[in-house]
Length: 131
Image (cartoon, rainbow, N blue to C red; front, side, top):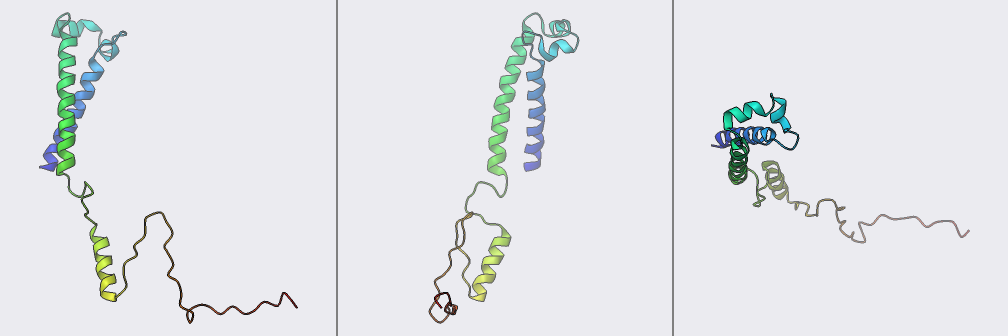
């Protein structure tokens, strides 16, 4: 289903790009580069090209937004719904079996050091600066 929607999304994107590029601006745009307005005038009529291309752009833009929304809801592993990667779950499981608690720190901050008990504190020899 995801593959089909992705393929459909790519086709919609290509169609949207083509319809936007074919619309003629004041300088005839890309439509003028493909032989001028004579071809588009013959195919769509005098004003028919602008009307057809603007309607096609609107329809393809709506289809583009809808396909984006569908792909975002249906794609696996997105949305931030509290899912964690399997590597994180394995590491948490390993730490709980070893008896050590997983580190709970905010990303981008330095980990908090636990205060040491008096017997764990390193002994610093007295300095001889006063002598």
